[in-house]
Length: 198
Image 1 (cartoon, rainbow, N blue to C red):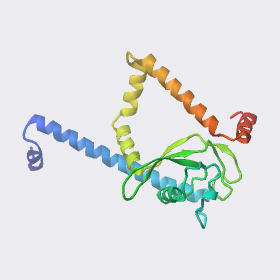
Image 2 (tube, one colour):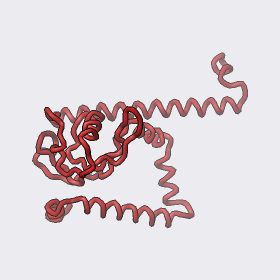
Image 3 (spheres, helix red, strand yellow):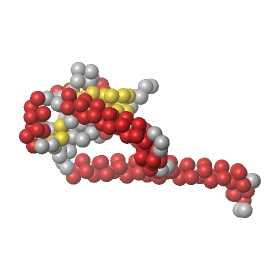
Image 4 (cartoon, rainbow, N blue to C red):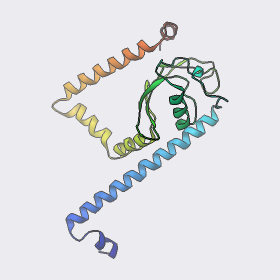
């Protein structure tokens, strides 16, 4: 064993513990790299799609906002993302503390921007109603993905003794989500969706 290995572990059990710690550090590094790549990709796409920041951020930019959305919350999210999410409804969750971070944003199921960008003058369905936007939580989820948790949960969903109950609960959750999205839509947007078969 080299000097580094002997300093880190003196028994097979300690060597296994050291390997687990090293694997954890490696997974965290991979998750951090993925998060960094995703941010660079978002910046590149924003530039390619001609997304520009408005000269002034106001609540009037957010057409389908709830009464709960404040200008302070909007500014915090815009600062965090680097662009205006024009289909924002409200902030679903924020961290607490001296420098709060938006964790989840609730989005309108259709996206149209009259200001600029990829959705300019087009009204399209937007697939995600609850949008995870906290970089720290995103990194932690990446770590879980790297750790194989997507496959573990899929296996539990389909191969465990409780599979039928899990699948039924998932189906109910999908139905509740669809009903909440539909309820958010204006009558005009509901008609547009039905006309286009979306």
